[in-house]
Every structure is written in C-alpha cells, then in structure tokens.
Amino acid sequence: MPGRDVPDPTVPRSAHGLRQFHLFKASALAAGLVAISTMTAGAAGPPTGDVGAVAPASAVSQTSTPSDITAQADVIGSVWDPRDISAPGGPYLRDATGRVVILHGVNAVYKRSPYELSIAAGHPFDFSSADAAAIADAGFNVVRLGILWEGFEPGGTPNDPSVCASGAPREGGMFSASVADSYLHKVVQVVDLLGRYHIHTLIDMHQDVYAEAFRGEGAPPWAVCTDDQPIVDLRGRWSRNYASATLNIAEDHFWKNDVVGNLQGNFDHVWAVVAAAFKNNPWVVGYDPYNEPFSRQADHTDGSGAPAYVASALECFYTGRLHPGLIPGTSTPLRCPAYDPAIGVVPTIEAADPYHLVFVEPDIYSVHGGPDILGPMPFPRLVYNVHGYCGHRNPVTGSPTSATRCALSVLKELGFRSAERALLSSPEQPGGPPMFLSEFGATENETFLHSVTAEAAQLQIGWTYWSWKFYDDPTGSSEEPLATPEDQLLSQAAVLAIPYAEAIAGTPTQTAYDPTTGTFTFAYVPDHTIHAPTVIITAPLRYPGGYCATASGATITSPAGQSHLLLENDPTGTSVTFKITPGPCTAGS
Image (cartoon, rainbow, N blue to C red; front, side):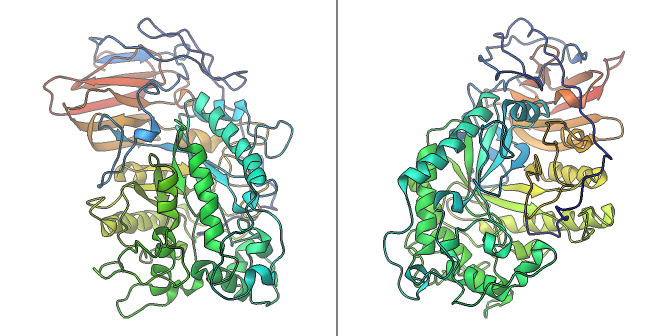
C-alpha cells in the first residue's frame, strides 16, 4: 500500500457511514436449475451443488423482487476453472471458451504475526464463513489474499554476518519445510473456504517498507542487511521510513542479491513451494510475486532515458539472468546484476505451476504518473498489475482532501498505465498483457470510489479494493475497510457492489453504472464461435427493492431472482445491449 499517502491507523473510526446492510434470505431456485444452498450473513455453511443447463426464455425483460433475489453460487463454476484463464496478449483475460473474464473483489491481508489470515475463530486474524458469505453477497468473485515472506522463513536478526557478508550467494538458506507446511496449511484453508463460496483467490506476497525493522512488514529479520548501519526509526507516519538511508541499503542488497545469504534465492524458493502447493487448486486465479516493489534509486536513468536501476533490478528479479527482458522502448536486452538468480521469480513460479497467471507489478514510484520501468518479458501468462492511489490526502485520516483532485490524479495514472501496457508486448503476448487494478481506495469517500470504478469499467479492467477489513494494519488506516471486525458492512461496500459482466461471450464495447439512478448498462459485440453464456453479476445488496433486467440481441436464460444472470447470444445478432434498473419492470421496459 505505500504507493500513496495513507491514513493514520491510530485515529479512531467515526460512526459516520456505519451500517449493516440487510443480507437477503434466499428463495428456492426456479425450475431448470439444480437446487443450491444460498449465502446469507449468518450462513453456517457454504453453497453447495452445481448449476445445470437452462432452457432459453422468450422474454426480453425480467423482474426480480426482493424476495426473489438469491445470492447465487457462481453459475459458471462448473465450466470456468481459473487454471484455464489465459492472458494471450491484448487487453483481456479469457477463459477456455474464449469469453472475456472480469474480476471484482477485495484485498485481505494480515500484516502482523502470524502474518496470515486463518479460519481460527476468536483471533484478530480470523477469516470466517461470515467473511466469505458477505464478500459473495457483495457480488465479488475474487480476493487478493496476502501472504508474507516472514511467515515462511521467520527468525534471525538484522546484519547477521552469516547472511549479510558481501559476496557470491551460496546455496541453502533459512527454509524449513515444517514451518512452511504449517504456514501454507492455513492459507489453503482460507483459499478452500473462499472457493466453497465460488470466490477466486489471487495470492499476493505482500510487503510495505520491506520489513518490520522499518515499521513495515514482509521480509524476515535475517533478510535485513544494512552494512551494519544502525536502523533508525523515522518517527511520524510509517511512510516516512521510505526516506531511511538504511532501508535503501537493505533494498539495494535484495535487488542486487549480492550477499552470501542469497536473499532472492530464498525468496524464489518460497514461491516455488507456494506455486507447487496451489497448481491444481481450481480456485486460485494467480500469483502476485511482490507487492509494490520500490527503490529510491529508481530516479536515476541511463543513456536511454529508462530508469536504469530498477529496469536492471526489478525486471531481472522477475526474469532471471538467463532470460533477461528488454530495456523499455528498445530492443536491447537488460544487463542483470551479476549475482541475480539465473532463473527469476516468474519462471520459478511457472515451472512449479504451469497453469495459473502471474500478476507482475511495476515500481511504485511510477504510481503518480511517472513512466513504468518494465519492458517486454518472455512469458505467456503475465498480467500487468497496477495500483491506483493519489497524493491529495489528509495526512491524519487519509481521506481525499479533494475527491475531484484525487480522482483526476488516479484516472490520469490509470490512463498512463493503460497506454504503457502495449510497451510490454512480446511474442508470447502480442499487444502486451492485460491490465488489472489490484489496489485502490482505502477511503470512505464514496464520490472518489464511484470515479475510480467508473474509469476501470471504461478501461474494461478488473480490480480488488483495499481492503476488506482493517486488521490493525501497521501501514494502513481505519478509514480503509468495507467491513467492521464484527462483520458489519459499511456504506462504501454498496458503492463497490455494482453490477458487472463476469464472463462475456464477445467483445465489450460499453459499461456504465449511474449511482444516482442505479441503472447499469452494458453492450458487447457477440462472438458466435463462443458456445457459453455471458454472465452478469448483480449483488443482492445493490437492489434492495428488486430490479428489472432487459436485453436486446440476446435472451436472458436464467430464472428471475438470480444474482448471476445468463445471456445467450441471438444466433445471428451483431450487437447485444443489456440494462438493469431498480424496481419492477414497467410497460415499455
């Protein structure tokens, strides 16, 4: 999260904006579907059962009343396996049938010991069925779930000479299979819990300010090498520590991998273990290898004008010395640091898991409109993974000092990132990898959230909001969550629970949601080679008075009252339009 000025976590949350949304009781599914359990805030168990075939209906409009609306299990769960989602090049993720895939969701990260969420009840790091049910009820289909390097390889002290002495990295390290297995067991339980609610997981190796020694989290103490310089805590906001000289020394050693402790080698080995554990998991959508990579030295440039330090460090961290990418905007291969692993973190992950996607992030110092520092990398399953924060924030609460200025800043940033996406084009991904917004928000300001989600819809990219709960975040804010520790949803949850197309049997051309009227409109050009329905998600908490759904160029084949609406393209149609409005359908709808 350090890519923006975040709120102070010590400031108490006001009661403003707090309310618990009514979570709708389920009604029986209509004929044509196999019966499934439904999800409510107090559900004792997850949804069960699969969705069967649905006969086409003749109606072009469909009314769903509050008593009809069902927080339905993902109707494409039986045919949409995240292991089949691809990033073939161009702006879209696609499933095995060729449909465009859109993900909406939240972040969930616990940054203090034990450095992970678990299903252990009664703890501040508990992630329960109530959490999963509420996330599903908001219409979200993905959680970016944090794991931390320190959780896998804990212990040690900074500047241990057996680790931090200068020299060629040696084999071996701090890894303990039993420690890693115990840590991973809890991660698997959370992933499986989310999967039972038909929610996918993006596994995120999280860090902020590198390590706890710098008032952040991520790296274990033994991986902090500062050339024996004393680590001085810069008081005030946690983010002040990005200016720490000792932090920059520690980060420099990680990016150059130039100490005998083999920092990157240990980090990559952990990722190999994680990817191997999840390679056959049908609910993991992919991996985020390193949250918000940074180096203050990224400001320096070489003769080509590329930010040389990170272009030759971060990108080489991703690729490894044997498969260097290109300096951005050139055909010149990077020169990787001499002690970098021969095989970088991306091919390490792909060797352990040949199915799932890898969501690579650029340097966070490009977050406010600076150039991206990544160039083309020779891998087939990359996603260009960006964050969207602004600097126009109150230094105490973190709320935007101007929602308009903050929104314009983030929209400008997303525009830059979208334009730069093509610069990552490679033979493996012509046109560049698709883009994903894995962090934004961290605020109660609903105007700002409307603006960012509307821009993401125009760019046709998925997102995960920061964050689901506060979890006493040492680098976060009590202003950031969508839910309280008692599982009460906050008002901004309804802002984000907007309808969206989860899977599109064609090419999307227009997506819009009007927060004033509650009207959602969507259009696409159908692809008649795709033999699977378009799926529109509408969260139960979005339309408490029911909704009217209408379609042209396609038939709504799902029964009334579903949270997931199915559209079958007309056999010879050239365009499809779809609209949802609050309340029952009226004459002329």
